Length: 241
Image: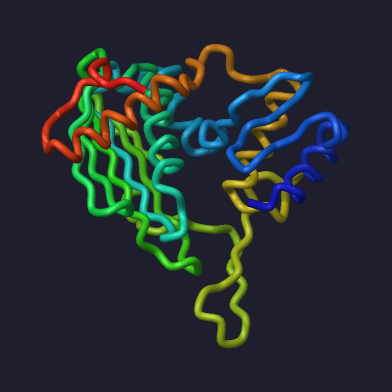
């Protein structure tokens, strides 16, 4: 994550000097003597549109099941990835996870079956197996009484980019996105973080969305570890930090 470029882009848009805030590698922003957890995944354009349909417009009438898949780089941190996907699930459904059944292969592959307070069944699959020159693959979908919503089209196995630049003998092309003209040059995950920072410092965060409950998610992560060890479902309320 190129934090210097992100700060520069934020300054160009907001006029706020990067000196008024600091961001650390754990994605906390310190501003006005307060610290706040950043959640850039909540500023992904695809996920925002998906949540708007599922919660705001209620097009499915009733959410019945949820599934997310993330295949990413070997170098990624499994705890950060798990934290992200658990928060996306609860934010997307406006519901809290209460029980977890987990299977794990070392610290690179996780398969989770979860249940929320309202009885929605959820599946989260994580595999940190890709080489650094391969684009991560993500997919989220919700099935309801009136159909299905997904952040990927049916035939989109690998995320599409706006521009592909093939150079010489390079196996993987350089890609560019046109998601946000004012943030041109940043990759999607950096654009999401920049949008998150702008929302915080300019005060236009979505107040209707539930706050990211770090303590509750860390309790869920403890339940995941316990379930993988015992080979049985574990209730979040039965775990202690």
